[in-house]
Amino acid sequence: MSWQRLTIPKKIEGLGFKQLHGFNVAMLGKQGWRFLMQPKALVSRVFKARYFPKSSFLEAGLGSNPSYSWRSILAAQDLLRAGVRRRIGDGRKTLIWGPPWMASHGSSVVDSSPPPFMPNMSVHFLIDEGGNCWRMEVVRQWFPPIVADRILRTPFSVSHEDGWFWASTLHGGYSVKDGYRRHVGEVEAAANEVNWTRCWHIPVAPKIKVCLWRTIKNILPTISNLNTKGLNIVNVCPICGLGEETVEHLFLHCTYAVTIWARLGLRVIREGSTSAHAWFREVVQTTSRSELQLFALAIWALWKPRNAAVWRFQVPTPSSTVCLVTKTQKSWSRSASSRVVGLPLPYPRPVRSGAFKLFVDAALFPPSSMVSFGCVLFNHDGSFFAALNGELVYGGVDEDSEMRSSMSGGKNFFQTASESDADLKCLEMTQNAAASGGDVREIIPEMQSSGNL
Figure 1 (cartoon, rainbow, N blue to C red):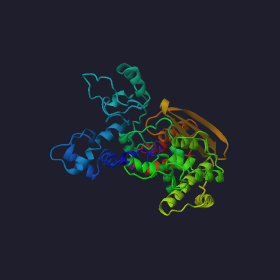
Figure 2: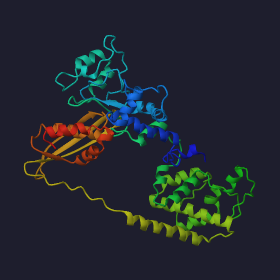
Figure 3: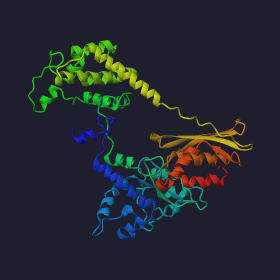
Figure 4: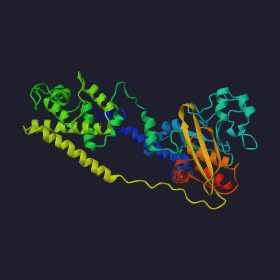
């Protein structure tokens, strides 16, 4: 197979190898992301002084006599332009008609025409002087209804400066994985395709999965496939000698295969099954997980007698092949069960007297671009105290919105300290905050100031 076909994701029909050029661009995007997030770093200051002294990396050009390093990093500029968004703090460093900043899963750029007398107006102009809300009358007056609604749904925090975040990740930071996916684009599965996700999750050894994949793709070196490559081999099944060696014959119609399926107790041979691809698709969709495991092992075991017949002129007995299948299945089940380790349950920590325990959670619903959140407040003795739920517009990170909204709602319920089950998320995001630019750095001071952390 060609390398291009191998780079197709596993969930479609490929092996999930990386396109080398696309992966290199995604890795270079990591350095461009550092230019945006760490402008005071030495490497950022050197490149800025040399190549973009009066702009950001996103507006930088190649320049005269560029170095190989700069030429390479600049190859990821378009990738970053397509994925970055501005997170609004006080709005002073973000132009209204500049980089995308509105909370929206569609276009985040203000596409209306700027007024001729104020083309470089900042978002700060649209925020109320008290810093608590948008200037609704100004927004409704200056922008079309759709754009105005997006602006009014965009969260902001005037106690912090504007910053960057990556729109496609929950933590708001750039990742090579997401950059690569954005660069190469999404591949859609064809109609009437095999459920490849289920195939790759069969509990068998990787070599057996690859053998099953090659069988379904009809790229096993059968005599029929070899003859299509220009060879001239007598096309007779080396096991039974009763038909041409094709994938359909080898696994469906060969008397040896029929015997194996019968002894294993798998009812996988359907009446009128002629196409191997249609047969595989039906088996993968209709069989249970244990039957699918046995089916994959049988496909692998049936290929071994074929090779023995071709290279050693020996055909193992059906009993030995069935024994190989059952023995391999039991061995794999034992090894898999020994690797299963139960995760410790997150028991709630005891709460001091007079304090509260706050449990929060949030879920994102992409079609509506909304984040629904809920929180339940308990007393120190475990009794119910209060609850709150609501919806927010997705502005980058639903965990951020979850913690911010629950803490904000908590102010209406209590003034004493509380503990939240979002602390693990908070800790994880805090550890990655410097690299990701996640909004957690803004949430923690707010939680501390409200007495909730």
